[in-house]
Image (cartoon, rainbow, N blue to C red; front, side, top):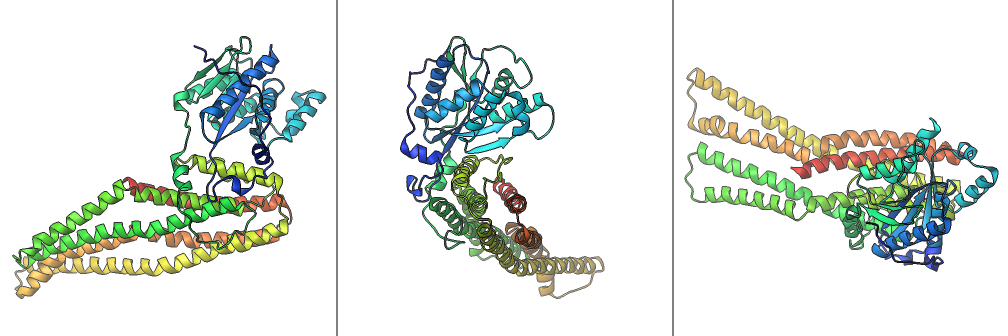
Length: 520
């Protein structure tokens, strides 16, 4: 059944919305250390519309209904073909929505699909966009249009389509785009261009809020890392990064101490049991000590599992590092596509917010290249080089000590077991203390101690960290030389993007390892 939406006339953008679109909204528009929640409405529609004024009213009503039903700001996403696309952009802008353009082909090729007058309108419209993304640099035109439609669906929370219900007249038509959205169970609003009837599909799957971003926004203020905002980003974004970094830094030691305590409690319980057996001890307290150790280990495990300590630590660290990369690229002439192909649960709203805010800022507040290079070299590359150097200096001695402890415990266990095997096989008599200590106690206790050393290395991720710290330092030193030599924005952007993606890859590898740990 078609859903009848309440009528709503186009309204002029409110002053804050207009400022937002121009990228000049002050940080006071948001809480001092919070990021806004954004939703995206994508569009696909026919070029020829039988009732343009009626379609305008229907699109306007659909967009207004989305704004009324959800918290956060809606951003429009579409191409700029004549007909439905331009109509959608005009209505979105009339309601104060910002707009991101997505083009199937580079402008020079895309222009050949328009008459000179139509292309002049398209170029004027593109100047209103906060961000322009080109989908296909090569390949057939039909494939490019299909890819553009699919990427519109991929980037949208809701697809708004003006569709007559007929099959596509060519590859990449509205019917193909709607079918793709249906295959993903994406929420869809379909407007019939002939009757102007509007219906909705899959709206039960619309995500109206983001619990992870809400949690991060509610974190208490904290300061760590950069003592001041060295970049051209708004202060509230810098404050958000600082408090996420602070929460992650103060959450990690507690988490690791708790995990280490479970290992040590199990080791103590095993040693107590081995001592009671080897030395024939019948002390009443020993079973209770073992029981208390096991109960304590279980209690710590339950605390970790049900108080979400691990999960909160991981998402705070991810948020801090994603924000760090975004801040480091803030002075570039355009928002760097740092997170373009990243589809990681729990950070979708965060990275969308960072990208949209950066798109607005980049178009409104250019930074001189020399200033950007100086800031990036000093506050990003040198800062990260110092970080990896300090981390290696901390991790390497700890890794060496634990690895040495493992080998000592393992070799002693082998020696004790070999001595017992030889004496038992050849009936060699040995003192009672040797029998109980070397033959009975050590072969049980030492393997557990060796396993504990390996567990501590694993818990602290020491082996991988030491190797990766060295690799990252080498990469950053090369990047430093390249950035210092760059003399154009294009070459500088490529090197900065390569550097940031390498740093983000390290974060993602860490996330994979820690998430695996959490699942166990």
